[in-house]
Every structure is written in structure tokens, then in C-alpha cells.
Image (cartoon, rainbow, N blue to C red; front, side):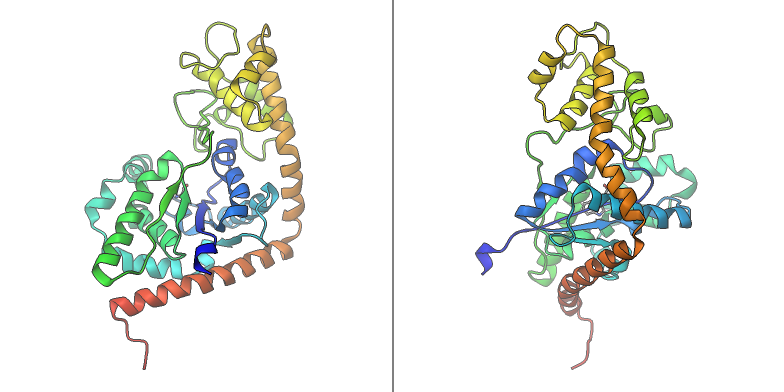
Length: 335
Ligand code: TRP
């Protein structure tokens, strides 16, 4: 029955290198809980990844490890549709059609396009510019109602909504217009350990600025010990203590503490003790995920079967929308 159907939720992560604890806390971890309340589609966005240069063998490896990481983090292929974007050709097919209702100005104005063009000046390609249209296709193909997105993807989601409405206006009701899904309470934004005014990013030149999901215990603890803190020595969350506040956010994310609990726990203790505790909490939390991911990566047959099954389900859902689109725009499909 219509009213009782779960809403559709879509998200994707690019397999472009290491996944940081920022990606985990801000995105992947939340995907797990959402599985209970929504019909979730989670994709490994390999088509998006090639908009910047990728080594073919490395991309293949990263795709498999991201799939294993999704499962190791608790995304259950029996509950969610877990697939690799390039395995479902409808993403490219819909992108072509949506391109015909997208204006170049809309794309050249995108903040991420401008940033990435500056950063990859030697490789400003059409794919980089068209990236948000592909993302709109990802979302619109599944009649997605909700998209959990961080601040850096809000503008892209806005374009997806515009394109859905534009298409619906021109051709009649075809797409659900997606809404952003605001993560409960702490959509915690994890900042760089070296410069807490910047978001933690795996593409930071300084490897001490981020912790990845595959860093070992010693590395994690070393990076936490080196994290920049602020003047004074009090473990307290406040605007004038961005470094300490960021470490508190990380600590809370892995222990479930509130700010007050953490402040109380470290009352009278200095930054040194606190940083060690943060490192240990992160390492403890990642250890079971890391061992499960390693186990899964040894079982390629299983991972292949998950991808194949996910792609099959996604394909069938996507085809329904794509056929409708093809009909609306006037593609002949026989009598
Ligand atoms: N562009 C997103 C990112 O880099 C990944 C992504 C691709 C995505 N397609 C999506 C996210 C659709 C949400 C919905 O984070």
C-alpha cells in the first residue's frame, strides 16, 4: 500500500582513495541506521571518480575495498541495495537526457567545479563539469525522496531538485523531487587535525591532517598526539578552542559521549592525556571494522555476488524510471 511504503533514500561515496574518519562519522556510519527506516540505495560512485585522474588498477582496488568497507561498517546487503555505479548503465543514459535540460552556466558556477578546476588545472574535463548532472541522475533514477548530504554537496542536491522540477514541468510528472536528509543531532563536521579551520580531507598534502579507516593503531595514536591544540590546557569545547573542540567531536563520535561528559572526564587533566585517549578510542572503534573489512576482501566471490545482486536490483528500479523518461522525450521503442 502506498502510504505504508518506506521512502527511498540514496547516497554514494567515491572510491577515490582512502576513506577518512570524517567520511565515516559524517556519512557511512549514518547509512547503517537509515536502513531500518528507508529503502536505501548505496552506491560506489566510480563514474564520478574518473572526473579526476585515477590509476586503473588502483580504482579497481578502491572500488572493492569501499564495497567491503560499507559491509564491514554495517550496511547489510539484505536490507539495502548496495551496488557499483558503473554496473548500472542507466546512470549514464539518464545523464545524457538531463544534459539536454541543463545550462552550462549552472555547471560552471558550481563551487566544487571551480575548486576542482583550480586544483586539477591540467585536467579540466567535461566530466568534471558534468559531475552534478551525473549525481542528479543517480538520485532521480530511483525516485529518491531523501539524500543525506554534507554541506559540500548541498549545491549539487539543489541542482538535482531543479532538474527534476524542470523535467517534470516540460514533460509531465516523472521524477520525485528529492529533499536533503539532515542527520540527527551531530551531523558532526570533522576538521583537519593540522588546521581545524579546514575540513578533514584525504587529499590534504599533510598525512597527519587526517585519519583513514585503514590507519593502524600506532598511526592513529601518533596522529592524535600531533594534532594541533589551542593555548591553555583545559579540555573544553568552545569557539576559541577549535583544535580541542574538534578532538572532542571525534572522541564523542566514537564513545557516544556528550561534550559535558567528555569535559568532566578530562577535568584537571591536560591535553596530553586527552589526545592519547582520543587516539585509543578511535583505534578501538576502528579495529573490528578493519578486521571485518580485511576478512571480506579475502572473500572476493562473496563481494562479487553482493555487487551483482545489488546491480540487478538497482537496474530493475532504474529501468522503470528510464523507460518513462525515454517515452516522455519521444524515443521510439516499437509498437
Ligand atoms: N558526489 C558525492 C561525494 O563526493 C558522491 C555522490 C555521487 C553522491 N552521487 C551521489 C552523494 C548521489 C549523494 C547522492 O560526496
